[in-house]
Length: 160
Image 1 (cartoon, one colour):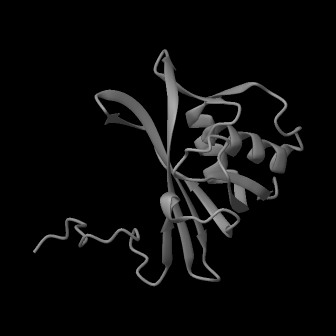
Image 2 (cartoon, helix red, strand yellow):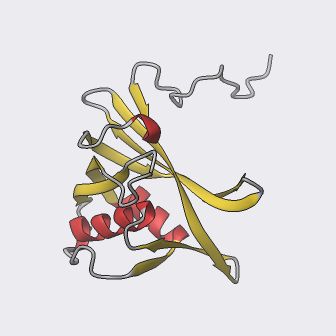
């Protein structure tokens, strides 16, 4: 029998012993500290319109907890370079803004929007950020069904 890497329908991404929460299950004010992984940007269709989505996975190995959060974003492509866009008050904006603040000391809520080269963003976070503390915060839209993700603290690996 050839091993094709097929797994049974396990939504915990192979970590059966982890308590996994998804964005829609997070309570305002809850926090997690652990390593962060940004997944690939993928197209998906919602109500007949194509949108872009990427996943953020934060894993707390000490407490065996994991947050898996899918974020839908505006994206545009320049010469096959994907750029994501976050408008002030939005979920993607808060993620990028608070991460930049935690890592680089930039001022919070100073810009009206962010335009970010997705591959650079993803690669830098996946390879250079050692750990983050993420807090689920109230979205600026009072009708939002899911919270925003606010990076409270972030630690980059030491540069060699």
